[in-house]
Image 1: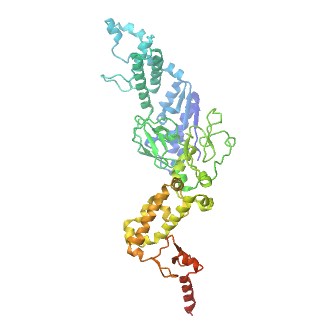
Image 2: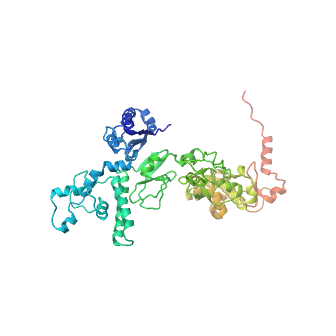
Image 3: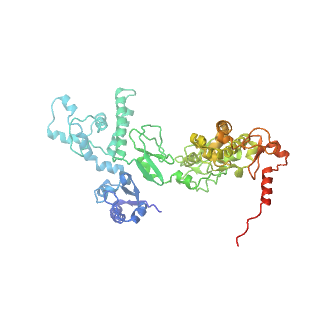
Length: 536
């Protein structure tokens, strides 16, 4: 489905655009406050063409409003559907905006402190007619800056009317921050005034961040492009937003994590996400790219990031092109953070486990696919068993476990002890012996899997051969030599008939030219028994 970005510019364009959004909102059942009040499923199905779903089930127009004069923007905000738009929908000239607000801002700034300390020291209050020109006269830089840095931060012991100047907007805070930064550079280094200015700068930036964040309570769960985002309560600052690549300040910012692919982002970045959840790809298409770094060339990508389509180049202008070793494609620095992961194709073809650099989406995909048994080594690279002895050992242990499984299924004691659940993290080991996960191969290479699987194999064999009388009774006697202990199909010195599953000593079986006496007996009985009469 198309997603349209609406651009309106100039006074005439914004007036026409305001009427356009009234019509579109009425067609889609959107109220002036952004809530859906329609009654047709078709409205919700097509609503994403023009709107982004924000928090609290509100819809925000996917629009950019541009004008040099802020007065035009104010008229849009005060219109019938002005509450539909967010502050980041508006783009206007900062210089014009500053000129537009210069006189009222100067007036408010002079009224920040009801007591003029300078006048108190001189003793006496100037006449009212002398105050009026002073409101718009230039003060010294330090006095002006002290007032700017105290915006909204000084302790307030007096009640103020609602919507007074103390409730600062973002632009005024930005101006105060710039003034504070200039003062820090001008003051003597390591002086007390410079330290105080740095502290005030920090407070101003924190307050600015609070104003930028949404004021309404964010929902605990958001569903977007098959992502299931859950609100995080952690105050850690070690997380980074996967969308904007900036630090998540958990102390003052709301952020979410996808429970499926662990995608992390600010609440304000949710509506900017354009990639579906990687878990959906894992669910629908559980397979690896088995070609080693299948590069197609940056020119075939039109010199753009394979994910977000940002222009990239190998020279780093405008953005550095970083290759993903898994997909072979090139990505920008926002989509490729130089994370590393083990590449399945290199493991299967070269038995190489050195982590390689991959993009963010490939890293999440490989992490989700890591425990999934989707690699059939016997078909992809059967020669691997000739060069890796550990694989042969693991294959034999898995074959033995599959032979033990029928004993446990019919044994009451084994079911009560839940012996098969010892392989709960590798359930495919009790289902087949030829499917492997990438985690299996990594553990085989490191030796961890061989140790743990040998221990489980010993526990299973001990139950069948020593601990359980019922399982022992299901053993076999060698019909060829009729000597020795009870045999089991998973014993190392036995051979099993492929037709009737009878068990013999290996030497006896091959000395008898692999002829099974049980099969011969069953064949003879078959010939001796008269056929059943046919119904007439």
